[in-house]
Amino acid sequence: MTIQNILMKYEANQENLLKAIKDAQREYGCVDKVLVKQIAKYFSMKPAAVFSAASFYDQINIGGKFSIVVKVCDGANCVTKNSTKVIEEVERFFGQKVGDTFNANVKIERESCFGFCAQGPIMVVNDVMYEKVTPEKVDDILSGYTDFQ
Ligand code: FES
Image (cartoon, rainbow, N blue to C red; front, side, top):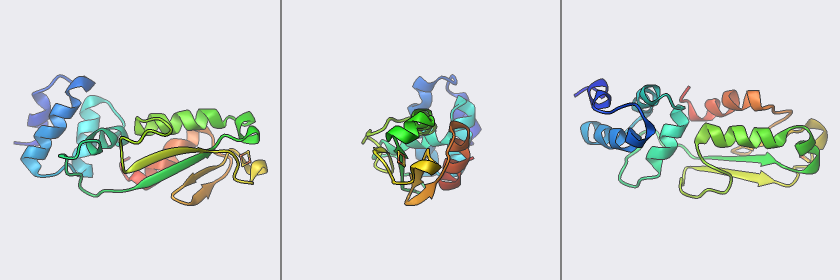
C-alpha cells in the first residue's frame, strides 16, 4: 500500500495523525523523513511537528533519528529585542513547549544570559550560537538541523 493510500483512509485532521503514523509504521517498518514529509503535507503540518508527535511513542521506529537542543536567551537585554517571540517560534516549529520532556530527541530551554547581550537575541542550537535571531529566521535555522524542509 502506498503512503497516499494509507493517508486517504483518514480525514486530514490532527486527531487522525497518530493513526496514520502507526499505519505507515506497520506498512514500512519505520517512519523515515520522506514519510514524515508526506504525512506532514497531508495534515498541513510542519514536518518537525509530525516528527515530534511520532517520536513521542516508543513503538514508532523513527528512521534517521536526530537529537537537538535549542537554548534561547530570555535575559533582560534579549527580551527587549523580542526573544520571547523567538522562543514562541521555536515552540511552534517543534510543536512542544520549553521544558517539555515527552520527546527525548528535542529539548527547548531558556537561558538567563549567554554574555553576548549586544548581539542578542541569542539562540544556541546543539552548541552553535546564532546572533540577532528574529522570529522570521527561526524556521531557516532549525530546518538546517532537522533536514525536513
Ligand atoms: S541577555 Fe541575552 S545574551 Fe545577555
